[in-house]
Length: 329
Length: 283
Image (cartoon, rainbow over all chains, first blue to last red; front, top):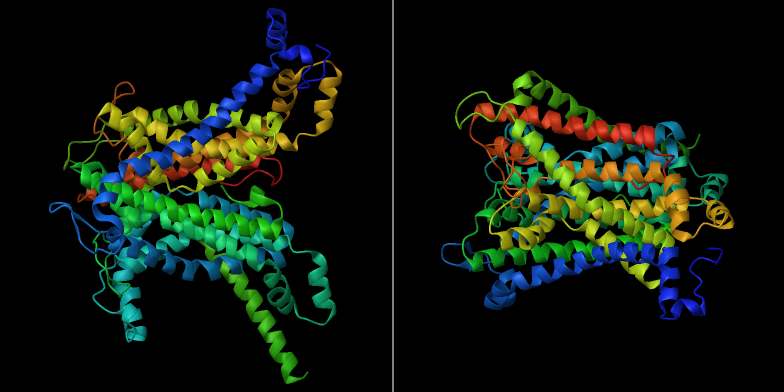
């Protein structure tokens, strides 16, 4: 028992009953193997996930090819499946969400990292973490019963009066639609932008701030012209991370987007997103082609978030040099 | 004071207060959500809600006992399936791993963590529902379990790494072999952090709706055993909120309050009493 752990002696490799017994008694090999199996299970699950998505979407992929991504018709009865309205809806709602959430999140992060005293900063971060823990169906619930009526009666008419000359803000105010879904998404992703941006800003060296202040810069100038540029790559990372969240977000979007596969320049128009169509139609999909078209949509969603997450982690890694330790999981 | 300096000072004050406003807006959303749910859901929360089955469609009254039990069963399965794999995998990364395999596992865990939950649902559908030809509690538990693994794994690893190496050396010096060192010294030393990670991961999947829609599906009655479709709190909130009946909407608010209460209370308790400092990964 006094041998150094994990240092294999020549006897360990002997295939004699005694050597085997000794190795088993020390049990290190067994513990190593068991934990390795657990870790390998994770790899296996992920490989299997990609494999299943690929195999099960084969029928739709061979039938429609690339035209799947540019076709606008989604007609299960006629066996016509085009993903364009869903991809469009996913991208538009995520874009709206980013436009609203990034200033809010980065602004809040600046407050937490540069202005707030440490105690206040950590308790506000705590609240923001709690916000990230709120289930998405709760956001959907508030979206349906609170935000949609407000949008219909107040926000959308006001936007039409003031910015109605833009094609973005034209058409009837239903309450549901791209804009409402984007707003709900924005609220949901702010905590992610906030907490990652805060970590990234805090990682900027103190000297940088002090040097700027010593040169006579105001607090804001030191923040905006020195600290934020130094952290900008990491902030981009937080934005990509938030975007990946927004693209894959299902329930809250499904409940307020209107579930209508159409492409319209107006943000007031009801639409559809990839995740929403999966939530609505997957369990009642009849026929293999229908199911495989839906699974191909799932594959698209997977690939989009895969690329974005990878990019986000790389960017944050570059800025903080601490890697995914700062990432919310 | 020159005009330029005035301008710079005004800009400074304006922008800095704007960042405060950004923070205020973000934080107030949580209190608003909480307050609005308590206001809307609190009045429909009664004893019946926790003990009765849903009333027949269109009738007023009934409760969500089956959804609450269903959610608990799903969480139990998720924990049984996800926690051991995550925990042992984390031990492997921190204690046994070499170079290549841990890097690969770590990267894959982060990747799996970012996969949209609805895609995990499709996977569980292909894995469990398709071979069995029907929806089941088991399938829902598998979906949630898969979502638990990466969080628990990464969290366990980071807490094990925080354990000072002097503890490891001490137990080696006393003659323990490696697995004994890990099991009796390192794991207990990191147990609070690991428990934090497990509970936060479970609290997170407790609110997941999307992966359950076509795995656990839903059920208006009790779900006996593990092979039948089951109701769950998040799914029933979705169904009731998007349904046509006024009474359903009221019950959706009540269920929303219960779900949010459970998730937030778990988060607050765990983060306040268990976590040490800020080194744990936030979820």
